[in-house]
Amino acid sequence: MGRSNAGRRRPGAARANAPRAAGLAAAPGGAASLDDVARPRLWQDLELRPFSDPSDARPLFDFAALPWPDPALLTYGWGAFPPAGGAPRAAVLAERAGRAVLLHGPVIAGTLPDPLALAGELLAAALPHAAALGADTAFARPQGLDRVWIRHGFVPVPESALPAAFAGREGVGLYGWRGGSALWSFRPGDEDDAAMTVGRRPRRSA
Image (tube, rainbow, N blue to C red; front, side):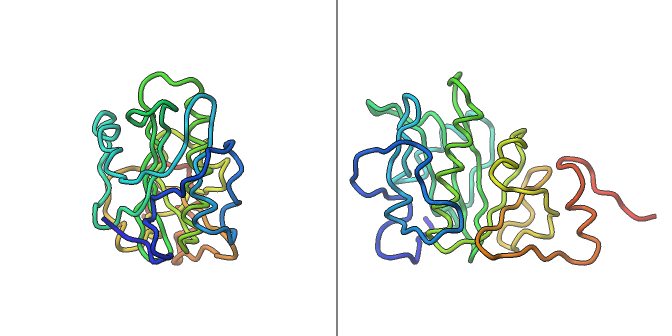
């Protein structure tokens, strides 16, 4: 299991505080502490909180037939849990390599109300968490959630933008997010690919 260098607390561990309302996490790219951004919060009738062990989300990924993240890089994750306890109903996980994270999910089980809104709430928790760990770049596969990614500041990027640790993974299309003062920098010709609609086959010169 990957470990954070930010203090001695496990990256996915939340401080023992009472849950607070969703949407109060610090803005992505801010200087909030890990303790601040990792506090549980309530959304509708679910509790959103970091996983103490991200592998607890594996049944959700297996059910959705999604690839499981690399255990060596898996650093933290957020889940949506019934307030009375029990298995997570939704999850988003993050692998970390240097100052970048690769998000897996959000995965939502069953017929929860307003799943797109729940996916957005999980991202609103996961991005500040990444920033608190020192990451300024996040990547994700579209998974049909284009509106959710764009609403949270993600833009289509070429595969060449991925760090070597994340390259060669399954999936079509790629979104990227940059926080703080970080800027995108592509190789010549990549700008055209980045501007294309996610999921379409890249154009090739004759």
